Image 1 (tube, rainbow, N blue to C red):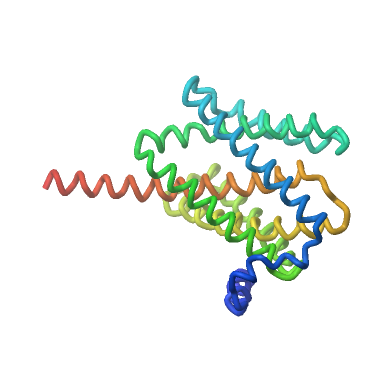
Image 2 (cartoon, one colour):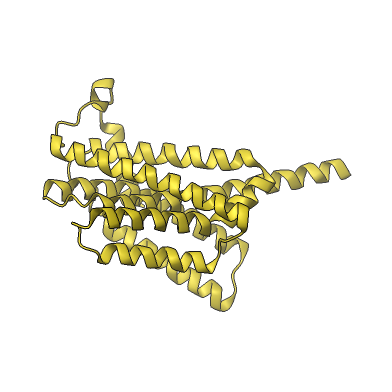
Length: 247
């Protein structure tokens, strides 16, 4: 937690102004152009993911099969040489469609309960992504890369918790802890992965497809957790309203 608090402390010590938000002098023009390609590709992947969720709503295709297909296309993408750009972009879009279909049941549930929750969750995720990625860009180079080890440990904890709940049985409290802790971890990854992309670009790694995939994974992980939290809160409010009506 000290590592995460140091992130916010360092940002609060910075004298923010309009000129600060325009100051990307530490990022070379080549890297800035590369970042534009990364974020443009990320936006296309998000649109493809929304299309996949829409396909699930139409034909109920989301499930284990689309999840395995998503991971399979990701592995296929990472195994292809970078010069096969068109093929890798196509695989990224296919992976995004499968990912959207995989979370389609959750999105369908949100639409049935309260469609405004779905919109609020997406807007909240987009704002969080913009804020934390922007902070990572404006911070000193490599300032938060040290958090990667801590975040990897967090992912390991999440995996063990999920395994334990699958074997020994879980509880609502444990599930919500996984959700909130996972949200904290993947928000941290937004910062670390953004700085990692910038640093790799300065060192000559301009693989925008792989880097867009990394950010896409962060975005979806945060979106799913925010949506679950908001759905739980909405369900609790609806239950309270029903009890008041019955009383």
